[in-house]
Image (cartoon, rainbow, N blue to C red; front, side, top):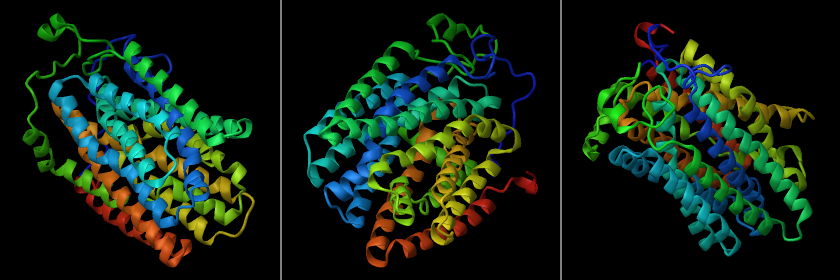
Amino acid sequence: MYLADRSAPSGATTTPGRTRGRRFPGVSSVVFALGAVSLITDISSEMVTAVLPLYLVVGLGLSPLGFGALDGVYNGVSALVQLAGGHLADRVRNHKLIAGLGYGLSAVCKPLLLLVHSLGPLGVVLALERTGKGLRTAPRDAMISLSTPPEFQGRAFGVHRAMDTTGAVLGPVAAFLILRAATDGYDAVFGVSACVAVLGVLVLMLFVPGKVRAGQAEPVTPDEAGSGERAGAEVVDKQPVDLREALRLLRMPRLRGLAGCAALLGLTTVSDAFVYLLLQRRTGISEYWFPLMPLGTAAVFLLLAVPVGTLADRVGRRVVFLVGHALLLLAYTLLLWAPDLPALPYLVLALHGMFYAATDGVLPAAVAAIVPEQLRASGLALVGTGQALARFCCSIAFGAAWTVWGDGPALAGSAVGLLCCAAVAGVVLRPPGGRA
């Protein structure tokens, strides 16, 4: 199976001024609008994410196993809902509506964090918040891919992820400043996060068009949909998508191989929260600076998302995807066996950010090149769900291994597993004839 799906034929057309920008040719205004929504929403989400590990482990006294279970719920619930969100978006032919419901649900859950202070209710609120994320992810990525020419998919997802990650950079900084200034720091973080989340929903409603067509950045009018007069336009079939039709996507060998490899690698991908906790224990970083640790990952991701996405369009998405996991393996190795160097935190966080730059946008770009338009959100949801469920299992298993054997053996097991899984993925994703 070949992930690269190289550039479309040279005759592929785009609409000047709509999908071509002076700085990012082929990237539509829809991508930038959705990027702005993700930027604002990620400020809100990352404010919570930055303080959550410390709040749960230190504030509420959870064991590594308890934290692993809750972290698994936090990341795994969205996986189950992605399938529903993707199918609903394809079925009702309104990706913005389903994405808006997801953003709205997440925004409603933010103020509830102010009211819960025990593990059970907190788990319910976090599960509902992640339900919103699951609803919005596939429709949002479908809108990005449907508004972008095939040869620019990697770049478009890179631009979106760069804007999204700008929010991930600003979120921890905001949480850090609030914790310093506020008396009741955690509640203040949760309250400000709720206000920012509402702003993200408003931007989605006002600036993202209701429907887009392939390669276009503007809404589709009924006359245009009937005539297909615009150059390069592709009219999407208006027939409702049946659930069995969506599930039949797994009969496609290339999509099945991609989904299987994404899930396999997810089984050995330690969650971000555990990476930051391990790095704190390894280097002795004080709790005062802990909320800023995600900033290092996000900053590198922000700098590299667009160039790496563009590189993936040119040299092949399979290569970049696998190299990203090799960089993650190197980060694990440094956490396990590197000497106690002052630069160790910076090296680990830089490798962590490079891993996300090489995988987070490249994977949906590869899926978009395989799945037909009318099932785009469903295909993205299938692959995303498999990967997220695998990471959910990894969080629980890693937390249990840490509790029983300690953090070192748990991370060593993950590193060996990642090496084996990456080797298998390299064989499965090998292009026909062995060509790059």
